Amino acid sequence: MTQEKKWVAILFYLVLFLIIVAALYIRIYNLGERSLWLDEAWVANAIVQADLSLLVKKSLTAPLFFVLSIHYLTLILGKTEFVLRLLPCLFGMGALVVFYLLIRRITGKTATLVTLLMLSFSSPFIHYSKELKQYTGAMFFTLLLVYFCEKILRSNKKRNWIFFSLFCVLGVGFDHSILFIIPAVFLVLLIDLPFKPNWKKIVSSGAFVSVFSILFLCFHILKQISNSINSIQSYWVNYYPKLSSIASFLNWFATSFKRVFYYSGLPFFPFSFVVVILGLSLFYTKSKKRYLVYIILPLVLTLAASFLRRYPFGGSRLMLFYGPLAFLAFGYGLDFLFEKFSRSKLVLLLIGAVIMLSLSPVSSFVHRIKHPARTEETRPLLNEMMKHIKPTDKIYVYYGAKQAFEFYYRTKFYEMIETRNIIWGNNHRGHTPQYSSDLDRYLRKDMRIWIIFSHYWEREKVSIIDFLKKRGVLLREIHRKGTLAYLFKIQ
View 1 (tube, rainbow, N blue to C red):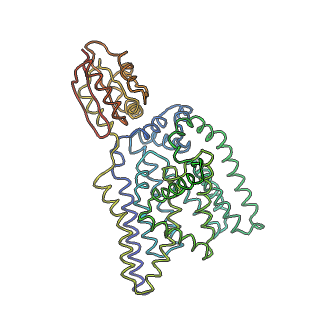
View 2: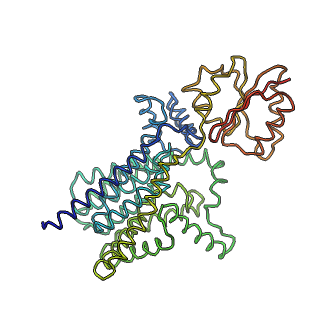
View 3: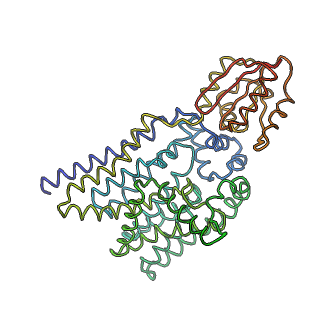
């Protein structure tokens, strides 16, 4: 190795080390300081159940292996926000490591570092690496299946097949979107491996994964969907195809497809889209057609599920598993452009392109450090309430605050007040006066009542507060990010 190549290699590994360390830091930073917000608390309340059957019932759409893993983690390490978010954080870091192992084999050093940097600090990826959600697990297992599929193609050893089959099964248990990845990797194996000498391995692995996936789908996933379909259908309706006319479908598809790229964290659209298309065409022309299967087939299967109104298609957290696949195509197209620039007199343009592509992830890193995400700070609100609450007080918990309040009351603030003094508010969205009617049943002369809000509708909050001001005197207000508490004395 010449002295120049040696210094290039040292610089490459130095920058790689800095990216990995910075990515780890931004994910660990503030991991346990933020309170759980509504969606996280919903999962947390399932995780902390002592009865496993109740855990499964309360987990709703959260994957079974995900909630079980964190359940046992909390039994060992404690029911803290840090422990609850630790597994998504580790999945996020694991996804980056596997992504690097994949992309370094298809791109040069510059494209590898730039693409890894862009993925490491894409906002959705950072966000869900720091939340009690399973979506980074989906990214991790997506990349892991592609990695072991590639490993089998290079080294057709028995242990690679065992790991591949095991990770297929684990992936389905940790996130249901892996059902879109498994057909793609098996199709690659069927196409790229000589079938006659390998048919036993392909059939046995396929049978094992298929039997588990079908049983898991029938006895768990479909049951979860049926239990939660009414609540999630209205939320995801815009992510299902619009079939009223061809024009409305095409408009929906174009908008949704664009949102997939935005949500994957690829900046500078439509430039990023052009580079992805370039990467896909190069996979085809440079005898890497299997990457087209990895990248295109899961997208087609997701779209088909969306037609059946069973999975949202477009820029949503449930499509986050697809992000790293888009980045593989982007990195391959970027490597081609970098190679063309470096061989011409456009070296300065190449340097400018590297700097421009690095600006977005670097600015995302700086922004996250300066402004750590805080959604609904229920824990500090309850800490402040503890200083002023009396044993005879009542607490009315607005329905949007239920999940977070329940988690913190059960795990940290159970001595705050007796359970019988807690009033759990009902959801009357669209019927605002009903909140006043509900409260009126509990109000008594000279009683003190706390009202706790988070994840609230402003008009509902205003209506409740105005009603109580007519019935009593406001004694105290406590404000924290995304959550409020009011103390009234009824006259």
